[in-house]
Image (cartoon, rainbow, N blue to C red):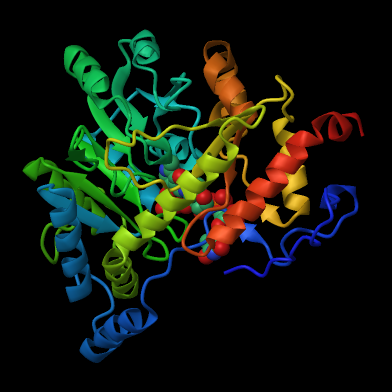
Length: 403
Ligand code: T4K
C-alpha cells in the first residue's frame, strides 16, 4: 500500500508536480515491485533447508519446485536455473545453435545478449504492431543459409504467433526457442506457454509475476534435450567425476526454491491482482486522447504482468517522454520498456547499423511505449491516482507541450 497525498477536496484542477505542485504520491509507485507470498511459509521452508544443511545442488526444495512447475505447465521437463539470462544461454548451448539467429530487437536486452554471449549473430526482425512480438512475415525475410534458429519472445506475457513460427522453423529446418521471461502462467489456444518450440526459458527475477529473488527455468517436452540441459546446468557433469560437455553453473539454490514455492502458493492471487489492475486502468484510460492499450486476449489464459500503453502526441495527446516526466515528478515511476530497442544500443548499434532499415514498427512502438505501475503492492486507489494524473496531463497537453 502506498502513502498517497490526497488531492485538496473541492478544488480542481490540482497543479501537476512538474509545474511545481505537490507530488500525487508521497512514496514512489514502481513497475516491477515484487509480488511477495506468505512470509511465514517462506521462512518455514528456508528453515527446513537450514535443518537439512542442504543449500543447493538438487536439494529437496528445488525438486519440489520443479515438480510443481511441471504440473502447472503440463510439460514433461522443467529445469530450474539461477536466472533467465543463463537459461537462454543454456538453451542456445544445448541446441548447438550456430551462425545467425532471428530475434526481435523490441525486447529486454538480455534476450539478445544471450545470443551474442554465445558467439552468435542476432538478426533483428520487426514486430507485429498489435502484439509487439515477432512478425512471421518479417522472420521469413530474415532467413538466410546461415540461419540456425528463431528466438521468439512472448512479450508482456502475450504469446507469440507460435503456429506461424513453428511452420517457418519446420519448413526451413531451423530450431525454434522462446524467451518466455514474461509469460509464466499464460496459454496459447489452451496450451500453457512452456510447451512450444524445442525449449522455452522463463525468468523468475524479483520483478516477474512469480519470483525466486533471481531465477528461471527451462521447459521442454524433448527427453534428450532435457538430459543435455541438466548436464549443462551442472558444469557439464553427467556423473560425479567426468564432464561430457562444456557446462556452466546454472543451478538454483534452496532459498530461491523456497521463494519460488511460496510464490506458487499465491500465484492465482498475484495474477488476479495484475488482471484487476489492467482492467481498472483500461476502464479509466480507454478513450483518453493519444493512449492505446496493449491488448490481452481476454478469452485466453493470461498473466497480465505489465500494464503497457502506447502514447501518441497526435489527436490531442501528449508526447510519451513528456508524459513519462510528468509521471516521474508525481512519484509514479513508469518505465519506457523497451526503449531504446536493442539494435540501437551497443554493441549492436555499431555492429549492425543496417538493422534500423528493416525495423520501422520497432522504431515507432519503442518511441511510444510506456509501462505503468502494477502488481500486488499497488492498491486499487493507487491505480486510480495514476489514471487521475494521466487524464489531467492529457487535458493540459497543449500547455505542457508549449512550456
Ligand atoms: N528476457 C526478457 C524479455 C526479460 O524481460 C528479462 C528480464 C530477461 C530475459 C532476463 O531474465 P533475468 O536474467 O533477469 O532472470 C528488470 C529486471 O532486472 C529484469 O529481470 C527484467 N527482465 C527487466 C524487464 O526488468 P531493470 O533494469 O528494469 O530493473 P530495475 O532494477 O530498474 O527494477 C525495475 C523496477 O522494479 C524498479 O522500479 C524497482 C522495482 N524493484 C526491483 C527490484 C529488483 C523493486 O521494487 N524491488 C526489487 O527487489 O531490469
